[in-house]
Image 1 (cartoon, rainbow, N blue to C red):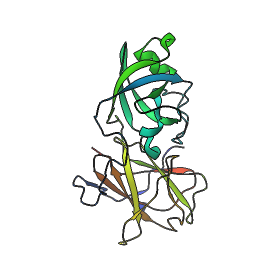
Image 2 (image 1 turned 90 degrees about the vertical axis):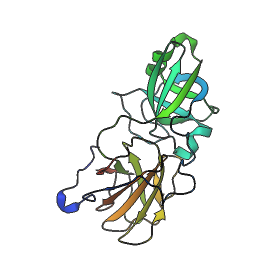
Image 3 (image 1 turned 60 degrees about the vertical axis):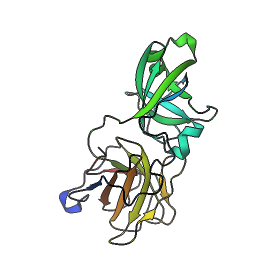
Length: 232
């Protein structure tokens, strides 16, 4: 579904806050994923990707430059949505992580057929690569997608359209204390007690330590709000 832009009277924080200092972050802002810009070595294979998968994104037939991350570096879905530059024997490609490869070991990326064709001959099937996580070229603010079945008493939020990988999500109501929302391996932050009725604020921390705050007017069911800020 297309993200909802909030009318001015329902403000998504008129001036969303982007914190460059990470005084409120946890001890490990990486969230367990692969650090941005750190070169990795491994292998690439390919599969019949659709853009959907373990990360719970919608299929993307118009954008199949996608890949599945190996299980160790998938890191309980911390890899979801990150962009990866890959250098292969005959070229390079940038992909977006949308899935998990259960049998793949660290360093291994399972690419869509379309992406694999950019770096090697298809007949090879399996090739050595170097790769690194990079910032995605995205426009607009973060997007907050509520899982089907979300309600004030059970709320699942997925952060989309993020330039750099997501480390954690917290929430609070009014001026209350920030509360961590656990992340599931299918790439949703799930509050088993729900966010309640009415507006609440979320704080999203990236793997670089930046933080964005947005105030959401209510819990949705299988729909998306577009936030008002983006990581640098």
